[in-house]
Length: 72
Image 1 (cartoon, one colour):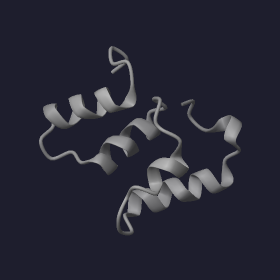
Image 2 (cartoon, one colour):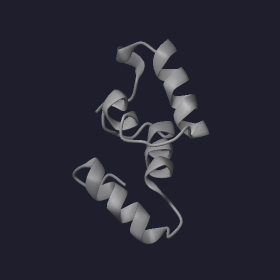
Image 3 (tube, one colour):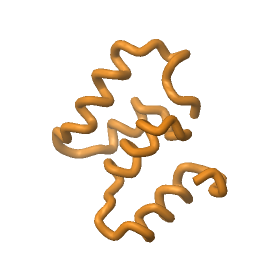
């Protein structure tokens, strides 16, 4: 995963390799394993609907100080 320079390239590669992986799943996976992801507040505003994984990440972001969230 670290062979990619940025989130967008890694996202594209994961979606190409795993046909049924969407943007929410890519972000969630990378978020949970501690990889670099875009700032959550910016990324979450692009997600339509009320996805359960996004709700979980919102809850984590609300109680986790910025210094403990994954680095961008």
